[in-house]
Image 1 (cartoon, rainbow, N blue to C red):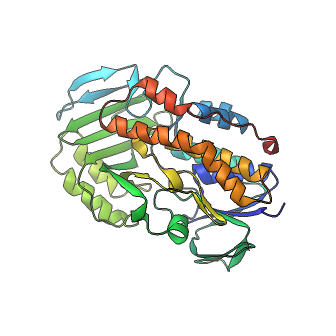
Image 2 (tube, one colour; image 1 turned 30 degrees about the vertical axis):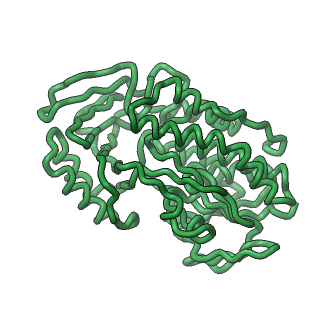
Image 3 (cartoon, rainbow, N blue to C red; image 1 turned 135 degrees about the vertical axis):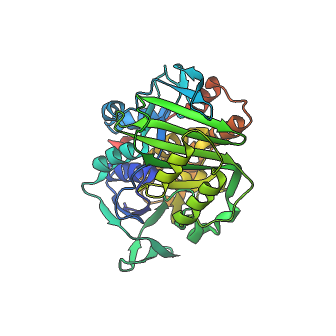
Length: 376
């Protein structure tokens, strides 16, 4: 097996899942992550359809189900906090409550994935790839801090603003498709005393929400607004917080308190609702997985599931073609293309208000998950 030494950029859902499956297939993964450790915070995310099979095959399904958010429902309120409507059948973050899907906080899932992949794998936290140089035998990789090293393959699992994609394929402006809105998520105290509950306030083209997390011991604030495309630095949180402070300055309900908490939030996240569209997810010895190659946007509700499935398929194809990375990458794209297309279309239908639970179920299962003998 020649292509055993694999560098994965990004220690989130796609990267950690890929590392797990590659290790089980006899590879030697190294994972480089810009953050000094696992990233904390994030929104409630969903594992649906065939992605549940991936988690089960990782022997993690029981642990994932034990960490579910257990949401009971949601309500909408006016600017004074008076309830306008409520539902115990569905939530904005998870959809229908009575189904087999699992809703879990993003960092709870990444912790479980890390625990399943940490032993035997090499992790380079607090570092980033600065250049990639390919030849017929491998990839020369330079880092910001680590000494230069050679790898057989490099996989970008580093999200919407993938550095690997930029270095190997070109500027992200060629691949990102903006969906006319922005989303912010950050942790706050559960000052509303929410009991496995979500509460939202809408005004014009903006939504403010709070939902409990981790058995009501904390909460997440969610701010969403429609806008023309903004010019901002996605690595400058202070600039992003100023954008939100200005946009939500006159929004009622608990918005001022949430904005006050935002400034000191340790896990602040802000970005556009965007998709990634690419003709190919590999070039030479460099490939992409998850949001880096085919982000469907949070609006789809399927980004986590696609990352889990994509990592599983990519690892399986690399294991099935150990001496031919081109064949492995080609087969990976062949297996995943329609599944990705269905889920990216789902996000567009949701933006138009035309999606249904049946469409979500169809998109979540729009792939026949292969059985890879090398996965053990």
